[in-house]
Length: 567
Ligand SMILES: Nc1ncnc2c1ncn2[C@@H]1O[C@H](COP(=O)(O)OP(=O)(O)OP(=O)(O)O)[C@@H](O)[C@H]1O
Image (cartoon, rainbow, N blue to C red; front, top):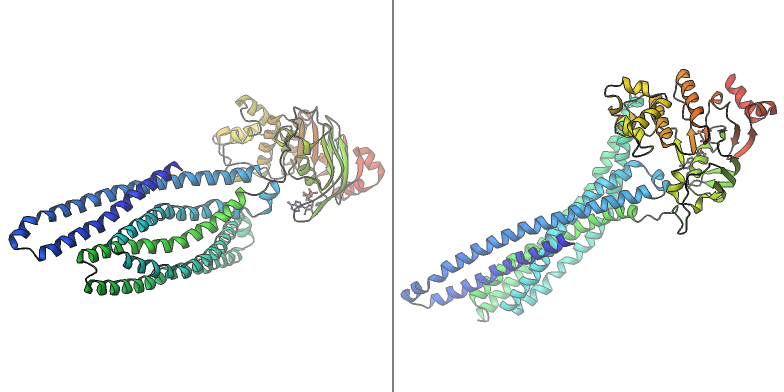
């Protein structure tokens, strides 16, 4: 706000200097008219005023140039700083907000809201900050000068010009609508591009280049079609103002000529008035085009603030309890849950895990196993039923303190474009190098890390692409081990490992998980055999429960799954 206040002050100075021009010209015209009646000697004696006029014009130009420069500088600083606030609040709101929100939309759409929409706001805000105040102040000030010179002529101008603005405002509304469509479509193209680049391997392997190229081209063509619509509306603004402005000017000049012939106006008045008109017309035109710029910026701002203002459904209750280190008792009581798109994932799931117990959750794909983890971390709330940790309903505890008690190794290892060391350290910020290395050893990752060029300081690459699938999993495991939380969630955590690595990691995990409650999701049933208890899920409920031996003796769903894998 401070920067904009300084910018407005400079705009005021710029406008004052503009008014000065027309007053100087009026003075000059009146002098000239007086000179016509003088003798040569008198005229020469009075010739001094020419020097004064020249000096005043130079002084005014210099003042105007300086104030214009400072105005732009101050406003630009204000806009850039404002946009940093907008972008950070957009990012904070998305990061702190519901997981459902971020997982529902295509990532390209979010990226586009951060980059393209913010750019559109930047363009609009810069033009607005640098032109709006200056134009408005100039118009008001110069109109004041005009009223002083000839109020009747000025009234005519005030009636003639606004007529031009009606269609311009109508166009502005169309521009806003179209611009919103165009920005939305950029989001789709961004998603399409990032998806294409990330799947480059499959694209090559399946010979999908023509398919990808035609999808991209369709996106680009659509982009240019929508953008052209915005441009054609924008292009109509200037001509409308030109015609209306021309008609107004003709009327005013005709009226002025008549008034001069009547003797109601002096040559000085006319010169001053024309100078004022020359200053005011481009400013009025600029205000007309600013409307379309503001509409485009407004459309982008709508999209940006949709994120900033998104309501948060999963937040801490005002009297939420802080969880200290829990002992790790987990209980699901008759939990029913559907994802926001309506997909029913849990139908009255009940199970429990005692502190320190290792419980495996198995079952066919889509049975709801990963959903159990999502609810346990309170990424979503159940529709009915309760999820309890150490007896606390997790809806009544502070989310961060709940998650601080959980270490997760998910199906996607989720590595960041940072060093291997930092990727592990994310498990517990502030961990020492020795602790990081110990975690890596426990996850059977130390050996391959030290063999990489750069070792622990080697970059993992975007999404960990410099590593193999099995290496990524071991880094993710090391991260969870470093966290040292009392609850460990392993979702297909060793699925990408070869048999030898898996055996080593399993042994390390067995040691690490002693004293911690560990929930394991695994399709490879050989890896869950040693769990204290196995829960078989089907269609969102637990259909069987017991140790490997008990379940094998039962001849139920688990035995069928094992036999299917063995065969
Ligand atoms: N974010 C989501 N939005 C909508 N539906 C979802 C979402 N995630 C999962 N589902 C649906 O919920 C159901 C249970 O999914 P879940 O991922 O829990 O299964 P799973 O047993 O872990 O499967 P898998 O073994 O294949 O990983 C499935 O029908 C799935 O399509």
